[in-house]
Image (cartoon, rainbow, N blue to C red; front, top):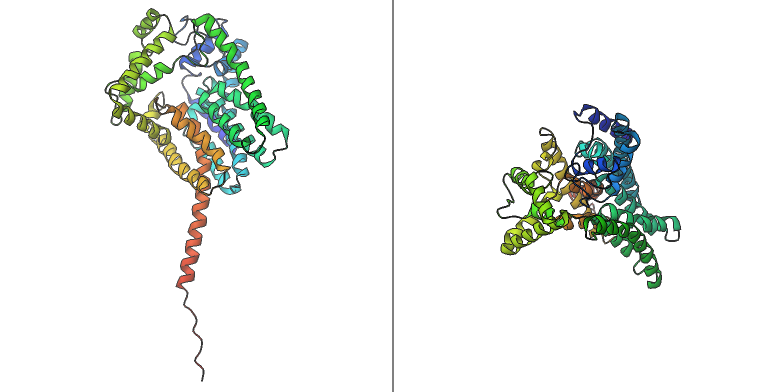
Amino acid sequence: MLLVAGALERMAWNMMRTTWSAGGEAFLVANAVSEGRGFAGAYGNHTGATAHLLPISPGIGGSVYWLFGYTPLAEVVLASWSIGLALGSYLLLYRAFGRLRVPATPRLVALAFLCLAPTYVAQEAVDFRLWEGGLAAFLSALMLEQVLASDDDPARRSHRFAIMATAPLLFFVNPLLGVAAFLLLLMLWAGRVRWRVLAGRGAISLALLAGLVAPWAIRNQQVLGEPVLLRSNAGLELAIAHYPGVPTHGDRYSAFMARLHAIHPLQNRDAYAKLAALGGEVAYSRALGEEAMATIRADPRHASAVVFAHVGDMITPGTWIFRLWGIEWLAPLQAALASAVGITGLAGLFVGVATRERRWLFVAIPVAVPILAVAPFQPVMRYTYLIYAPLAFCAAHGFVVATIGFRKTLRRGHAAAEPRSRPSDAR
């Protein structure tokens, strides 16, 4: 019933929207794929081949548009896919935390919260039709659940094969969570199987990853002139986050939007003209990255403050982050919900790790890696989303531990307050 209610809420959101599809670079690339122009057009129609995004999520969207055209049916299919990924990831995490022996009731509370709270409703209903966040979160939840299952039953090969295949696929969808996935494999098997076995299993996963990355890199060499292994926009993203005078407090929304419109080729035609003059998106991103690194070297103290602000944005995203391409009146509530989950979730995760139960490290890794890896860049909603659901279940665990501790304290207090009976005097 919770999953049905969550699906209905997101369907209602779609029906109330004035626009019917996802936007941004992912839509433009999906549009190019559907029209037979290949993986192209990230900065506008007919702007040429791109590696601005990894190909799986926009490729799925483009295939649906190719089959059904830009029709309501296509959007229904993609919306069902996006919503299904979100609710599926929640269900997988419900199962995963059950394997960690978190009781059913708090897990149901966390599941109900995730299904019904409007924290990331727009991303789950719309954006993740074409953007990678929904698929990345789903694969990460699947990875965690199957790693815990394999830890419970090491002899069962289905769990082993699942995680060996999921880790490289997740890496090619979202490299940050992919790194976490490979760390989970290392933690699961190191010290438990012989090094020869560990090396063999790792080689299989790396070979699968190479089977995804190599064709992409070869294609990029042919159409972009350089063998880009993953995405071409790291320098661009770093430059959006680091420039002289970037604020760490105050009106960060206006500063971010001004910077985005100043240097992003999709937002600024002069920026696109500079991109073309430099020889393409790879050279443009590299030049911006060099400028950003020069800014960091010129004032490392301020750069460190920016990085710490980004860590805070990942854990407690402010209202301004939810205003980015969001709903103005809903943003304060979304920020409050996400921040509450971030704070209580980290507390619950700390409690789990502090018990010295090694299995809680399986949860900590896919939470810590995105926080630290995104820190040099400016987090936006599709990045803060990656740790939201795991932390919600961690918060449920923390609530259980706090409740048990509170009850024990009350019992000790009552026991101390009871008057001690005195033996009667002998007569």
